Amino acid sequence: MTHGIGGSSAAAELAELHHWPDPAPPISGAEYLTRIEKARSLMAALGTEALMIGAGASLNYFAGVPWGVSERLVCMLLHRDKDPVLVAPTFELGSLMASLAIDAHIRTWEEDESPYALVAGWLKETSVRRLALDPALSFEIVSRLAEVAPSVDTLNASTVINGCRSIKSAAELALMQQAKAMTLEVQRRAARILRPGITTTEVRRFIEAAHRALGAEGNSFCSVLFGRATAYPHGLPGEMRLAEDDVVLIDTGCLVRGYTSDITRTYVFGTPSARHREIWQIEHEAQAAAFAAVRPGVACEVIDATARAVLTKAGLGPDYRLPGLPHRTGHGIGLAIHEAPFLVRGDTTTLAPGMCFSNEPMIVVPDAFGIRLEDHFHVTETGAAWFTEPSASIDRPFG
Image 1 (cartoon, rainbow, N blue to C red):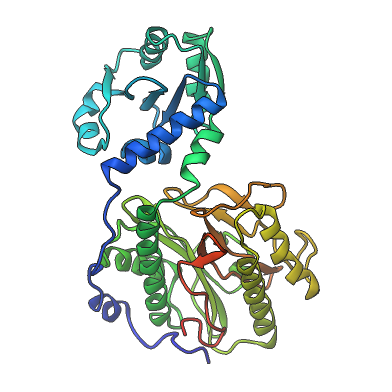
Image 2 (image 1 turned 90 degrees about the vertical axis):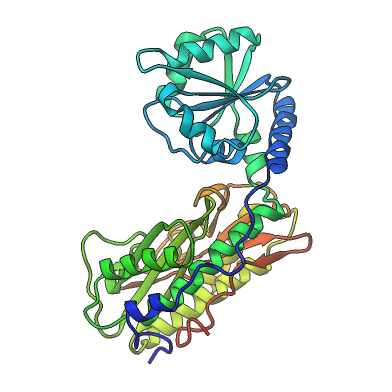
């Protein structure tokens, strides 16, 4: 029987939760300015005079504005030698000013006006000939911009955006540490509420409530899988009910000042079979091998290859063949759940201190079950450091 699984209720677990006792401080105004200056330096290396950043994680990163993408253009225009400019609908001005973390000029547009003409006017005023574009900008935005500013050359700003966001500061690491510690505590308590017949919806609702009880901004996402559905990395549609001896896979995260966690635990509700134990142990070894291979200067793809070598030695795979690992070993994380760089073959980005990644070399046994153990680490000067300690064993997944 798996220890620490079942035996409690959602009400009992929620009653014990309180806001995080030592919350990490927010990103300071000085840090936002440092980010902008680093972006300007990278823009110079790229050979561009200006950068356009759309709504989303990057606008949050550079300006503190946590808005999502919509059909209305919201963006920041950053010139190498001039103050930042924010473009937004006029009726959103109050909301924008309430969240804006930097000093910037604001240019607004009414609903019957073209925001693209406004951007084109700024490009003309500042004599911009080459404009680097946030790679997250939609085709609609890029194509409309080309119509109103056909003489401006555009180029991909990935090296600028990723060059800034991929290296986390001490303040960012602290916010991410808090988010991950919260989620691990919620994972532990979610395991305790399991009982025969409980639905995946009940578990997801508990996880949302538990994250909020700890002071998080709620789930960043939540996947709860039972039994055969665990053989599909992102599950199967429809409601599931838990049965005795089912494999349980819970993959979830929360938000703390916009920074996200993302932790997966897999165990058995009941008695693990010999095959469950075998695959769980191989997964555990692959995750440990990937972590041990991390060093500054090592290419991201080497970490993926290291994890796959463990699986291949155990007779799984090779490559993406099943039974085996159907996806990359890990992804960058920060203000987005998945962000560059990635631990996958072909990503030759070299690891550097401050980079943060998931470590999740999932093993899928087709049409039977899957085992994914996911924790996150940040690269240090000499190797790597876990945000959360990996699962101990299939019998004691929470120690």
